[in-house]
Image 1 (cartoon, one colour):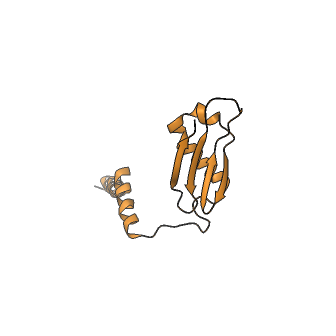
Image 2 (image 1 turned 90 degrees about the vertical axis):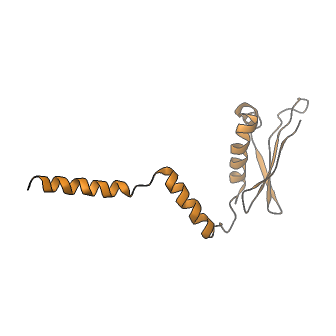
Length: 120
């Protein structure tokens, strides 16, 4: 009996600890519920505070749409802020070339993609 008590306590502690570890899905469900009842944090300078962030977002969004080769060929991407909206443009490397560039607008405060196209 003396030898089995520590073993039983160890098994019981392990069972309690593992029961408290939620699955990934349970964690997502819990946090979705939390998001419905809690206010979101919004940085004072918005989610897209500077041109480097705007360019990084534009690159990440454009990559799966237009492909790495296309978007990398338009580097450097350039960004300018006007009236709370970042406009991000790709670079066309020759004036007589056929083709176009990325044009994206991103809301500075929310990070929402307002406009997206690829010129011809």
